[in-house]
Image (cartoon, rainbow, N blue to C red; front, side, top):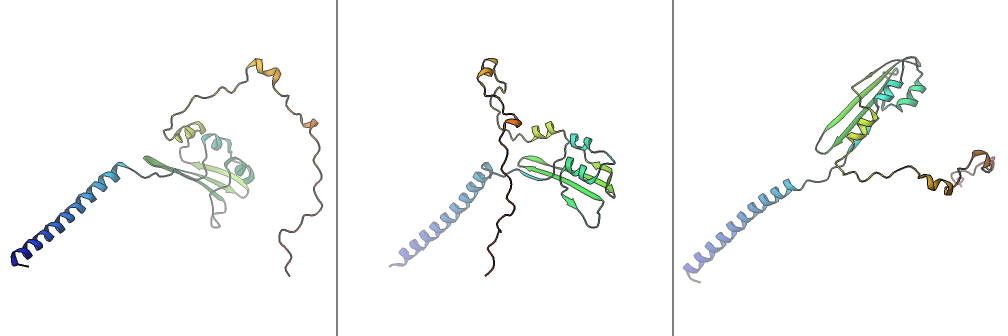
Length: 180
């Protein structure tokens, strides 16, 4: 091989290597622009206990812990160090929307509710409306039975007409096999 052919081969290899490096850079830029157009799906994250205005209004000082739990649900946070305090924390994160965070704290004296502190709370209707993720609502079906269908509808079963339930067994079989 002559000196001229070696130089030509080296030059062509250098040009091919630099062209491939430039192609990688352009490919990287193209993939970045494509990635900025296509966004991955991120699920809605709902955590904690949702407490509405209606629920908070139903809780009154002087109620027992059981009554408060019946209305607001089980508290998200109960602390050994703060036995007379229940915290209801709610967070809602959705792609493209500012995260929501609310906190409701119930303070007790013994077994009786002393006071309820809460962030501004939405009504149940406002919260349900905020859950809409942009889906188009279809036609809502009519939920009433037309009068001409009433005579053909089956009669509701009355509690007295139902058959009595069989008695429960005196003993249940063990859940685990006895150890051998």
